[in-house]
Amino acid sequence: MAMTKSKFISTDKRNKVTGLTLIEVIITLAIFSIIVAAVSAVLTSTKKGFTSFEAANTLKKVNQNSLNRIYIRLTECKRIFPYIATESAPNFNSYLSRVTLTGTPTGCPAMLNGSKIPVIEESSSIAEGTTNFIKASVGNRLFFANSDSSEILKSIIDSIGLSRTIRIDLYRFYYYYLTSDNLKSIRSKPSYLLIEWQSVYYADYNQINNINDAILKSNIIKSLSLKNINYGWNTNVLETNINNAFYKLQSNGIMALDSGHKIVKNQHSILTEMLTGLMGGGYRYGISSNTDLPKKVPQYADADSSGNFPGGFEVIVVGSTSGRKVLIRSVLVAEGTMPGIIGDDQLVLCSTRDLW
Image (tube, rainbow, N blue to C red; front, side, top):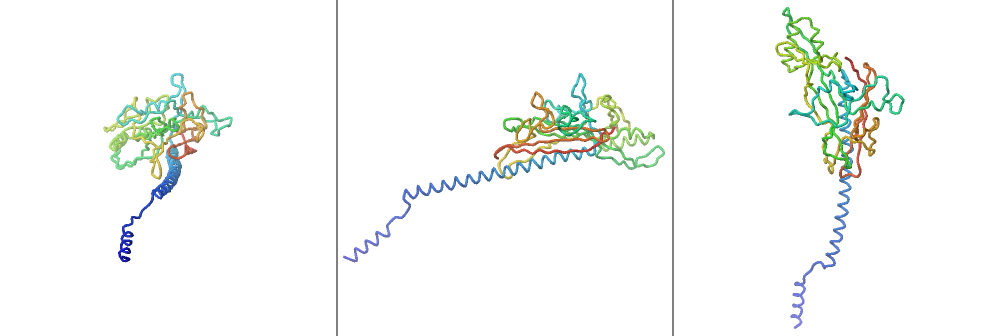
């Protein structure tokens, strides 16, 4: 009987079921929830930190690259086109009126309403707060022509049959302006994009026209036309005589006046375009509108009644034609998953010539 009892006890031990009690399960789930919440908070904080870091560095890089690009163009400047005040057109420049932004298959974004090019002040200062500083002369767009290239024409035959090598200077027109065609609002206020408009090359009309050898001149025009340099610019023509400024370089060797000429576009670029969300969350960005946060905009100009001008792109031009100084301020801002608004404020000062 003792042996039988021992056998039953052994069988009961083998059949006994082990596991967690309900209390143990509840405690485990509670601990797990706490850990998940803690890890989630850490990851969210880390993501925000990465987003802030990325946004700050990207804004700075894009802003510097944009201003450096304009600076390089200005160092090769041939002519800056100024604000001209008249009774019929208080913010007008006849050269700029020959630039077409929209209405073509390759149209550019529309210019921000209320924008203006700066008044060139030959005797004023760029130092804000001084008696010579004129706020009303500050603009938020810039239009100039530069001479960044030349064309070397080889084997050009003159009137006595000699082969000549001729150098002709080339010019491009550059136009920088803000557009409101940007869906990225910052604190429910609009932000803007900075556009660079660039023309095709224009040959120096005076260099060609001053060649006395008619055969040589004709062959130069033909050669330029074959190289798709189809227009000439008389750099001596002022805004008041715009109809005599441009010429068509024809394949038959004739340089014909083109009185109604529209400055031909080569391309346009959005200088403030950037990639987001590479390291953290995404964010909205753009050139700042008029605001006090996170950077004071405007700094140099007075905001107009519309609330658009000038935005975070301010341009000042002072000095004589042989020694212009151009000061440009650009303020980029971003808002997204990071805490607060991030801003980058950059200045560039360029000494350039304005010769014609």
